Length: 327
Image 1 (cartoon, rainbow, N blue to C red):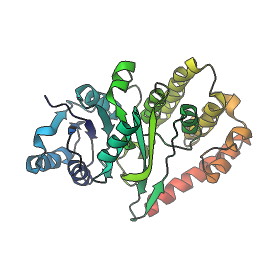
Image 2 (cartoon, rainbow, N blue to C red; image 1 turned 180 degrees about the vertical axis):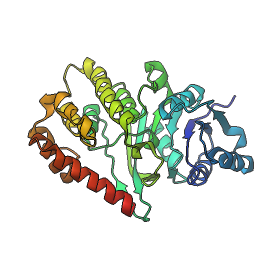
Image 3 (tube, one colour; image 1 turned 135 degrees about the horizontal axis):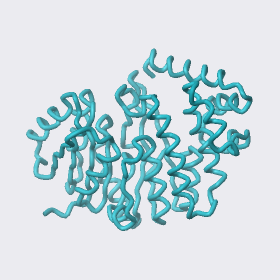
Image 4 (cartoon, rainbow, N blue to C red; image 1 turned 45 degrees about the vertical axis):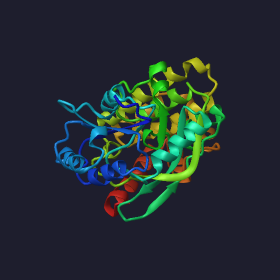
């Protein structure tokens, strides 16, 4: 059995348009000691067939595990399955519709080892269908409080795919995706991980291209399940933060008031904006020093003014424009 330095886990579901680009970028890394775990989450298209063909032709075949779910488990449970199979010293989870630079893994690993860090994070690009690429700066510091507060204030956007994490941190702290939520599990997991370590490294350079135009992406689907998941996410975060004894209460309230915008998108759920944690419905949490855009702040403000129909109209118009012009 190989003692791999890094394991890359990639769940695959409805990624036919993107899997070849993604897989090639992963398999062409300049870092040798990589274990690859690709998991077919019962995809209904040819994503996994395309991947298998690429694997048969590559020179890393002996480092690749191809797993298949009998039925669609969702991204969280599929990631957990990959984690339980992983053997690398560090683990990173790359989505099947994204792609990375050839030196991403080596750079993150070398930085983590140099700093003796449990977590190493880098910046990334948001890639639009128009060809435009937006640089997303994700500034983390050795100060863990700084990082945790910035996560909740929306100043950084924690994700598995630009974060290399020591596998022992998952195992020793028993921090695994539980599959209870499929949306927001990045935030849930990252918050738990940051609360469990004092060693974080940051590289102020982008190596990953985050796809922002995959219509099948879970973040593009707005339905009743998403709304219910949002409610559950709030409950999960409350449980995670209980041991901190309100240390991050102000930042948590800022996060909540913006998360609750999901209730506005459907008229039947709007009441929950006012019923769930009403104490966060204050202008001071909307307009404090946070990472949410001015457009969002103004839009949420109409909720506080008891004019949810305006907030809903603005969001629906915005989503329609994004879909029509594919931006």
